[in-house]
Image (cartoon, rainbow, N blue to C red; front, side, top):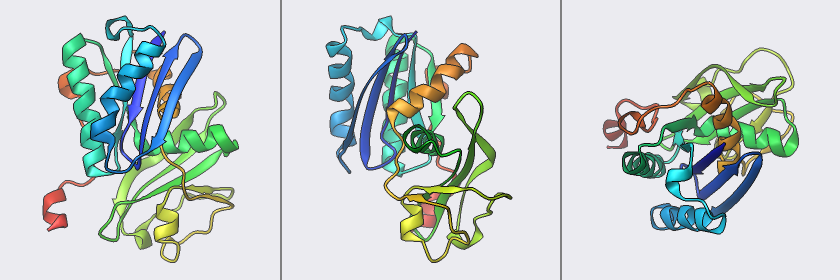
Length: 222
């Protein structure tokens, strides 16, 4: 199995390559520079591992939610590569990727991901890790005022993402511990995408769309 993954929905430009069971990854913090560096980073990763695009089984990307510009960049790159190669594309939630990254680093089993969505709102999702070590979404991902975040029942939740720092006095819950700098990573996307590839849960280029969670983005920004 050969999968290429990337995410540009946050302040990072994150790329990773899965070759059978081995992962090669590069994760760099570079806010506002992803459009400039994402393609060179992908090509460099492939070149270093002597893999051509058409030798991949699929291309995986963080589809959002997150930075509007960053989410559009990832979806556009995925579509471009998909149209050029005909490869299947696997969109992965950027919130789920942040939760998976936190689980992989800290072994947290229950993650509440909160990302600053600006205009006094947060992107939000609750994830529980299953017996395979993959995070599963409880309910649905949403965007709302921090005051309106709905906390799942039960104890033992950990907080991931900058929403916990920006709106620490407004979110009505105190997690056991916090990873305020937690971001989605391409390595985490690979973990989640591998299962989707095996289940044949992929899309073609025309359907590789960004997820904003806001239906009236322009109106709200004005």
